[in-house]
Amino acid sequence: MRAYIDADVLIGHLRGARQALVFLRGLRVEGVYELWIGAMQRAEVVFFMKPEEEAQTLLFLSEFKTAPVTQDIIDGAGKLYRRWHPSHGMDINDAILAATVLHTGVHVFCLNTKHYPMTDFPIKKAW
Image (tube, rainbow, N blue to C red):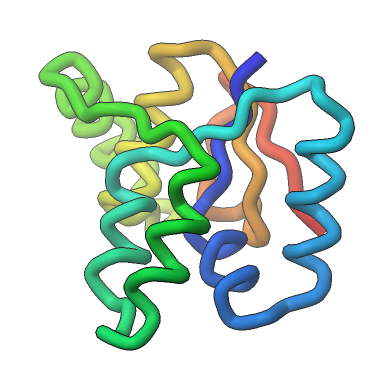
């Protein structure tokens, strides 16, 4: 079963948060989930890494499969964004990940569950 990891968890790990390391190791050892990230979450990490962090960051990201962004996902994300942005401030990256999850039928692990106000799929706080 797929589990998508939101950028806040990835960034926490890269910044040395012990909770992120323990959480990600636990998921891997548990063996229940295939670890995935959305294309936009990968972009959030890659776009803002420093040149001296590139090798280590790309090595870390290689541990995850990255879901592509398709036309169907973008169209679905647009609907989610229009529905949830006015009341919950949903951003574009989270809308695209939510649409990806709805398309593939899996879980999201994040630090701030308020980013995903819909109830169509399991959203779990990482720690």
